[in-house]
Length: 302
Image (cartoon, rainbow, N blue to C red):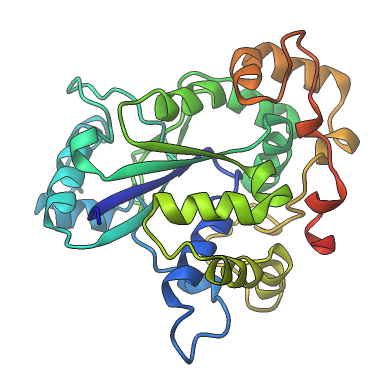
């Protein structure tokens, strides 16, 4: 069985927390006292941008290093950490897998066991991302189309995470799915409408138990409503200060009632090629059924 780092990669608000909840359930469901997922204890592995994790991997403190220098060190940190692991670990990453000034990818093939990339229709991402960042829809769409967009770009303030270069939504997708890493691409829409098949593929790729009973049990435990109820009752430590709620709706097709035609057109102009490639647009640039809800795509009806 492969050991080392598996990346759980996605553009923000594409299903990464749902995925990690499933993995955590699969890792722990055999324990007699494990009856529910605690969203504030999803211990699948450190986020890739964790300053503390990087410092441990490098053996140095990063306080006196520039943002650009830290970025160039990250692949070396991952390579060392990966080489020391004796079992698979699963790490959330929102960075694009871009080229660093050193000339190597942020996450090179010799520094991981593989990458699972979760993608979601950018129409729905734009809405959830706006809520997540506390910005307008137009600003969210602008961010998704900005080539040099980054999270935590201000390096003048100490933060527990380092800068995460995103690029455009399209660039983010291709930086991962066109890399030389062993990669599994999973669509959010398929995770909702065909959960058993999608999550079985996830389990097989990540070398987790993949029998039907275990997968079904984990799917039930990480049901969207269960995660949302926990946040409503106990809060969620990963919720940004500007966001009213981390778990909002979790549905397919929210864009139909939320985006204006000009906003839809802007997203298509910016991302048509990748949307076609992923099945969100057909060869005539028409929006496909994948982008529209069906009965199985509503979490409260599953």
